[in-house]
Amino acid sequence: MEISTRGKNVTPSSTLAMNAIANQLKAEGKKVVNFGVGEPDFDTPLYIKEAAIHAMLTGLTKYTPVSGLLELRQAICSRFKNDYNLEYKPDEILVSNGAKHAIFNVLQALIDTGDEVIIPSPYWVSYPEMVKLCDGVPVIINADPKNDFKITPSELEKSITEKTKLFILNSPGNPTGTVYTLDELKGLSDILVKHKIYVISDEIYDKLIYDGEKHHSIASINDEIKNLTFIINGVSKTYAMTGWRIGYVAGNKEAIKIMTDIQSHATSNANSIAQYAAMIALQGGEKELSNMVAEFDKRRKYMIEKMEEYGINYVRPKGAFYVMMNIASYKGKSINGELIDSSDKFAELLLKYNGAATVAGSGFGNDNYIRLSYATSLEDIKLGLENINNFINSLR
Image (cartoon, rainbow, N blue to C red; front, top):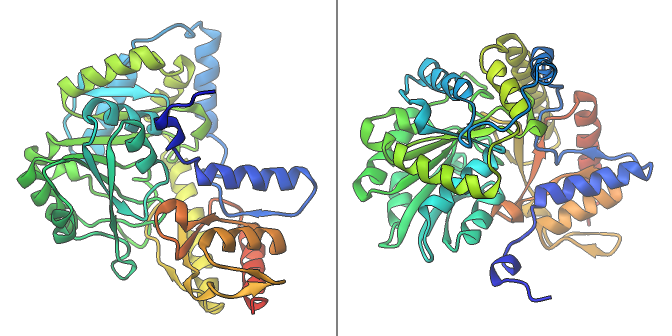
């Protein structure tokens, strides 16, 4: 079969691949601690499920506008206003099949062949692949772990060329847990406005923040940067609704219209029942969210304390539910004659010999790290970290 060059150039998602391997091993009866998962291990709150059931029982199962239910888009506008004092109208919102789909719509609408998109590394695995699918060129900035993997305005400006069209910002970040301060965002904003560079601000983890940090949207700094920014968010992480597939983008009205037209020919509207559930989700859930964040923070603190006890190097996360563990010092070592020469090999052998599933940093753009998720039980975290420590101590 003749496959397109575009299709051949896309790399499979390493996070989904590792999760699939872990699940397969579990199905075979093997004990596996899965640190690879990128979703809350909490169930969707009951009030949201009841909203979905009500939608089904009352016949709310038909097509909706491509851009999403008006009531849902109004609820999204209210959330932006209440949380970040950002003013958006419903025609500046597009509801999509998850935040990933929302990002892809933005790229489809903005990127022409050869346009460059600046992406800080470590990055979420899908960013560069989606850029390539739009015939764009990913330009990677290697962020310094000593700066919590946050890039500086000077690093950003040095990467800008006459072909630069877009910058992707992710705060709180996956896989790093990085959270940019307001002053740091202002510095980046000045550069982006100066060069008229569009911004995808992926804020899907905006409610999962620790250590007294606060999330700031870059669009809230001033009207100039707001006009260049497309905010991505959804209900997956905040409301434990990953499988419901509801994400959204807020931005310039004309661009949102183009994205809506694109989506109309790709998927049409997002699932109607899930839209009704998402609308209700956005109107409540404070107690459930507070409990979830408190539990994540408890696990985060245990994980980093234990890593320090074991002498494992890491970068302290302040958001999301991931820790980046440094494995550079283990390269060149081996176990049972098998050499570790990359993060992929480290993750492969760790799973093979000690039953802990992680995600190699190579997929995130930094081969000196692996990603551990604490979106799993404290019991599994304790066992998994013991397994990692035993694995490290067995290396020669």
